[in-house]
Length: 116
Image (tube, rainbow, N blue to C red; front, top):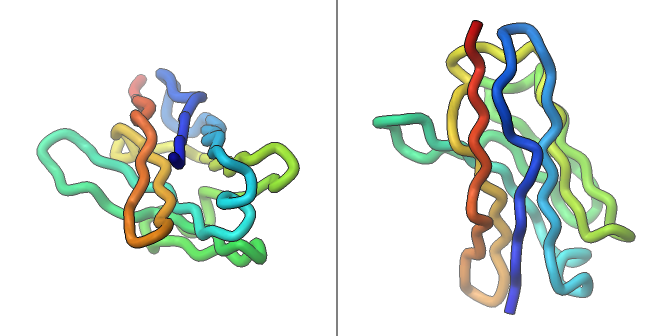
């Protein structure tokens, strides 16, 4: 059973930064998997914003490229998302995702609100 637990969401002002974390178990699956962050804003479809391959190679959606940084720590079973220069349009529920064995596994989501 693959489990993902996100943390780190909150309320911040525009221009501030926030770091989200996602702990994945079991470790042997995490190390061999691509991990992805999605977000879903109110009234909008869930969108992929960034992912990181098992070798550490990242990729980013245009909407977050240059502001967000994804990283992984295989020793801690953790994938992190550092979000810089946050904007009101970044307000959403952020989800961690990991595909494995033909299934998609999701965390419970963490709310990020950017507002002055």
